[in-house]
Amino acid sequence: MKIKIKAFANVKEAFGFDEKDLTVSDGITVREVIEQFKTICEPLNEFNGSLLYAVNEAYCPESTVLMDEDTLAIFPPVSGG
Amino acid sequence: MKIKIKAFANVKEAFGFDEKDLTVSDGITVREVIEQFKTICEPLNEFNGSLLYAVNEAYCPESTVLMDEDTLAIFPPVSGG
Amino acid sequence: MVKTALQQDRIDIAGIMANIGGSSDGAVVSFIGRARDNSGDRQVLHLEYEAYGEMARKQLQAIADDAAARWSLSSCTVVHRYGRVEIGEASIIIAASSPHRKEAFRAVEYIIDTIKERVPIWKKEFFSDGSVWVNGHT
Amino acid sequence: MVKTALQQDRIDIAGIMANIGGSSDGAVVSFIGRARDNSGDRQVLHLEYEAYGEMARKQLQAIADDAAARWSLSSCTVVHRYGRVEIGEASIIIAASSPHRKEAFRAVEYIIDTIKERVPIWKKEFFSDGSVWVNGHT
Image (tube, rainbow over all chains, first blue to last red; front, top):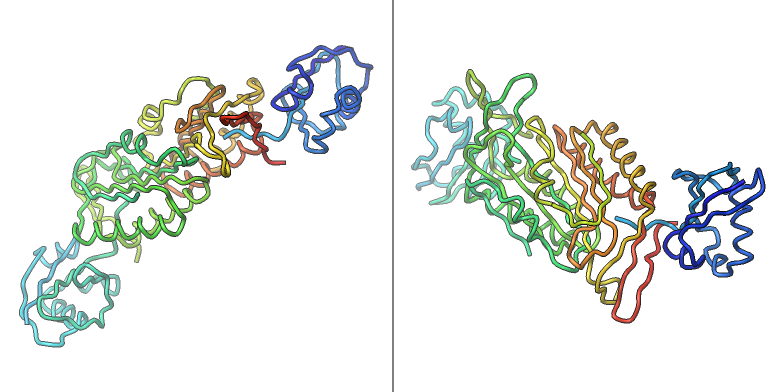
């Protein structure tokens, strides 16, 4: 299935992209996607535990199972205001 | 000695004046001034206990002893804002 | 910088908001009290505020100075009106700036609470068939 | 009436303050967050806010709706900027009106606290010799 990844702030800088289409296996979880990225993107390990996730613009836990055409956003703690 | 009385809001309406010069005996307290006014101004009794006093623009208790040329302000609970 | 005023003129809200604080302030909190068109179930046509001017000015300044010191505000402006105030108009504005927001929130709420307890100003509500002095705190 | 916006343009503070609420509101409370010229002991030259636009807009609206319902606000306006913000400029305004003041104070403070926890917007501080992303809540 196909999902879209979005990255923001210093996660975007670590990834080197702000948006990417990805083909992943059915039933994959957010955690599994992140683990895959960590192997190809060393700086991501520095965020240990502080990363936030949103699927289709709603916050979700790492255990969330992704569906076809989902958009997964990965970002650091927010600092607006 | 001479003192000045100021009255505000519904106390002013009860008194029928907003400012008055008064000759009083030395050593008189705020409470004694008020008691005198109550005998000549019946509506003042309706404020039982809620009146506030200021001598020379500073809040003071009823027991305050007045001095020559003091200004005694008498008013109801404030309602600004 | 603490500025307080008791005035008959309308309050220049935009001017006050534009000029409060400086470039080291991250937060501005303001409170505006406005004349409401109702009191309980009665329609209010306008308000009038009577003030013990000399004492009210001293008290406004003392309360704002106290709050500015206690919460380390970098600036604080308080303006209260007296005389006739039309429905929808501001009777009071309190604006405070500080590097961080918690201090400004605490200070502004303290100032309005304390003004309503201590500053010798009285509100009269006018209806189509008369008027009443508003009962304050006792 | 709840209005929220995420915009690049400067915030029209005077316009928002002039139009918030109606004639039955006795209280307007506002919070303005401004770009400060310092961060710790470093001089900040300007800020940039990055936003996850679609999600940030949904969150701003949800937070304002929630606060308006919880504290029975009669109106609430929240505007947050993204992109470059100069020192002294407002990055956010929250204004709420209600018949009485306590509700407006509680609501505005809740909204800014919750925005800083939950709305996907990130601040970058620019110095003469570089820039850093500001660490948010974890």
